[in-house]
Length: 81
Image (cartoon, rainbow, N blue to C red; front, side, top):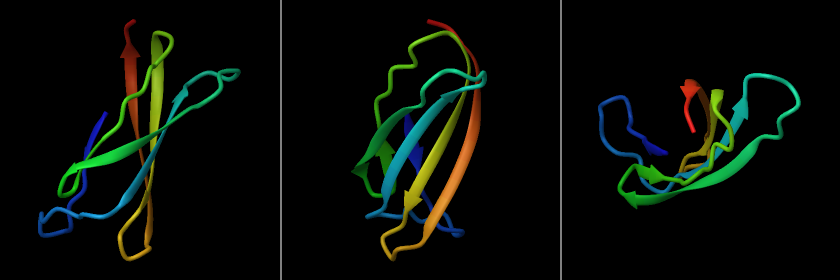
């Protein structure tokens, strides 16, 4: 998983902590947690094993360098194994 963080002007946001969570869309599955490591200014990469095919939701728990917290989510439908 690759995430790029930028400010409203498009400049990269360095020094953030990015924790990621992957959830299946149906009940009964435990979430998978993983962290993003900064590989370049504002660019974060984390590796996750989506253990089964189906629809997933990715939640990003971001703490910016100055301490502000941001949460973002997106759907990842139709994951094939």
